[in-house]
Image (cartoon, rainbow, N blue to C red):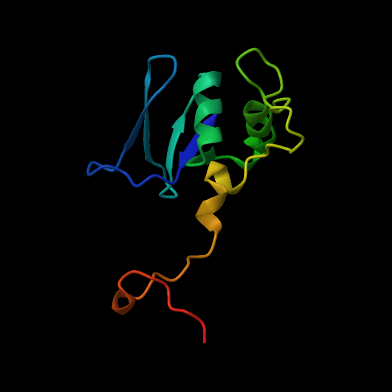
Length: 120
């Protein structure tokens, strides 16, 4: 599958990925200026697509890419059965901690010696 990447290239204009199969995949600019490479190893392609910095270069490969990201190495479904606590355990915000999207709280005033100001 031909993949493209959003990763900033090295000085020589390439992005090199060390595949799960031991091969190095070199992403180089094509005629449209995209960094692309043919990744023929299914496990490497799946890992790259799951990481979020790579995507199919051809629109016709989107369905194949979706099926690759849904399968684990045994060909099964990646969705886990959870940890039994009743919540969905879904991946939110690309796997970032939920706290990463919480609003910042103002820091205590330095004039108050690190203690929050009392409401009047």
